Image (cartoon, rainbow, N blue to C red; front, side, top):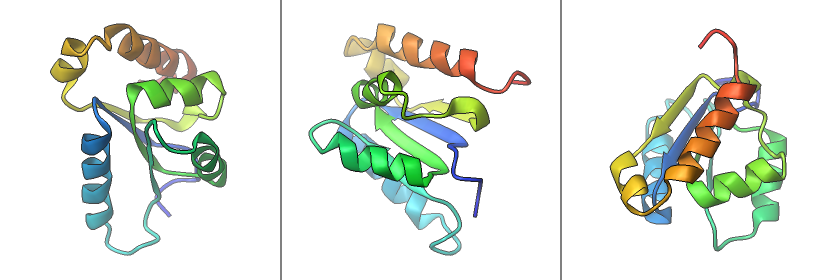
Length: 117
């Protein structure tokens, strides 16, 4: 297992399609199926099934800003082990008007994450 079930990495994407593409690539990079767990979170699907997966433990989560914020507001994420945060196509997120959401997410991660980053 990659980590201990707490997310080690988060990748934000501007669209559901890109988030799913990123997750697919992460799955293909595995040396074996149990190496690490990836969860993709995005709107338009049941948030409760995503919440259950988060509680079971994931190592890498990929999501759209809106759904990541939803999970943050529900306190479904534990950022204490997060080591990497990636903003994929950040320029697109900013052009789509997600600047405040991205700042909120990154600020929350910084406040809750490890102090040595």
